[in-house]
Length: 474
Image (cartoon, rainbow, N blue to C red; front, top):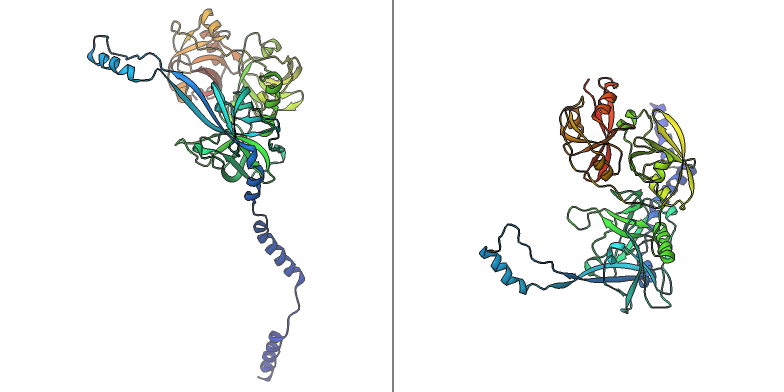
């Protein structure tokens, strides 16, 4: 009993005694608290940014005269009483009216050069620029580049407040950014958010690696600057993805390095001249890669080669997969148009390609772009093949109109082809890396494919080329 009392007394004394500090645990606690406090200390200062950079942002209004076409009433004969009613009302409808476009822009030089979106000023008769101090100027459109949606303007003013150009390479996902513009005509509106992604490509826009953000951007913001917290312009707000026509959390900006490069070209030459190979390409998915005997999905799959193009002269063909240019690997299929577009005209480049299970090196001389092919007319029908396709051979005239050698028109699809998405009206230009000009050629190639194997059909539909993987019956 005495021993128990003694142990209890010692425990009480130990509890009441002052405890020595635990420096390591305490240091960790302090560090954690500092980490929690850090975001509050680094809160974004948009007030200073707007005060400093606001004067460099402008509002742009563009107008053009639109003439009313002659009134056409389908399905009504001239003697129909309703047609007479329309004719009586016709004089009340103005023969021409003024169409207006609103947007934003920003000053890039003290002597009056500005950047905005091409779609803000394209095909406009008159462009007016309004500064923050309410001064207005008639602007000259120096040049536009629809591929990047960039336009360069010039106003007759001096001593203007210009923006500072940022470094897109240093921009990080999650970084704070702000937009200044005139959404729905509300001048000098400021919205903020973060960078959601970099190098984002959207359909039919393979020349621009967009900056994606969640900054609120609406009609009227187009052409305005996207700032980082240092007050540097990192992009031009260009488009949104929306199901309603308004902002839904996805906005895209043209990187400022792309815009400045385009502006320099427009200022020097009035237009942008890009190099070209003369090919149409597609991304490789795992199933297509297997069909071509590749393990990786990097590189650019060639869909079509334009006649008399640099690619044609170099020996490239549909079904080739470009892996490298001048020793630089293509991490994404969208790297190809960017690299080629930035290559000086007349320069010869080395292309490493994948063809029939082997790598091969070709050389091509970069040239200027040419026109795109058109859809051919329908020829005489033939009978179905192993894939469930009813095919017809194109005539030489139709192949010339399409600007390809050969081709088969799909008159019907069922079975594996229908399941893969091939449909009536498609044109089959190749299977894997073999161009197809006759039904017998395709059938012979199909006979060499084992049951359950996959083939890649090069399909032309509504002006679009794509390889479609089709699995043969097992």
